[in-house]
Image 1 (cartoon, rainbow over the protein chains, first blue to last red):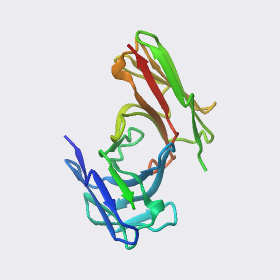
Image 2 (image 1 turned 60 degrees about the vertical axis):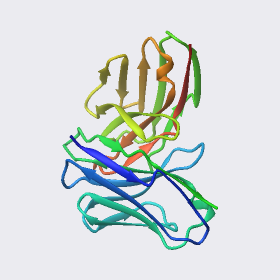
Image 3 (image 1 turned 60 degrees about the horizontal axis):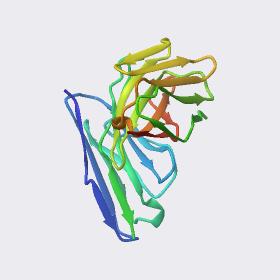
Image 4 (image 1 turned 45 degrees about the horizontal axis):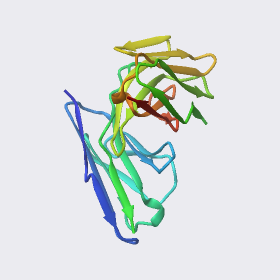
Amino acid sequence: SQTIHQWPATLVQPVGSPLSLECTVEGTSNPNLYWYRQAAGRGLQLLFYSVGIGQISSEVPQNLSASRPQDRQFILSSKKLLLSDSGFYLCAWTALRGRNTEAFFGQGTRLTVV
Amino acid sequence: KQEVTQIPAALSVPEGENLVLNCSFTDSAIYNLQWFRQDPGKGLTSLLLIQSSQREQTSGRLNASLDKSSGRSTLYIAASQPGDSATYLCAVSTNTGNQFYFGTGTSLTVIP
């Protein structure tokens, strides 16, 4: 069966520090991978998605970047965090199977920038 | 751009009651629609997936319907239980299946 791992679960970082959040998927190959952010009281905002190694699409211009160094690994990064980067970050994957494409999510990372 | 709205934002019901959660979307050219459950501080758990050509899906006490032409979906929960308390989110995917747009969710509280 497929599983998705996301870490760390919680993170407190000072303003101006770098960020690296990692997400890996097991039990599938060539998944579509996604990073979402969920701010308090708001819906999920799509940040990045990737359809293959080295292929990254950015949805929102911001202080963050994403990379996909391996087929089942997706990394969210920042060189210098801002207070506004605080939020709940979720990684997700899908395996395109026609219209039966279903999204599965990791358990999320709670990031607090202080 | 696709916009997804969920009404109501919050709902409180006594245990045992049947309830309906609503989801509407502005662009009917969707690939599919998915309902999720989110517990506080946790990730999203997939509940039901409805393909754009389908009208409903059922899983246990849950039934989701889709009316693509009117841009609406409903999630029906029968005989609600306190364990159903969570936030319920709907998401629609674009006609390429690569992107998902989420509503802001309905926070459900089932009172014992």
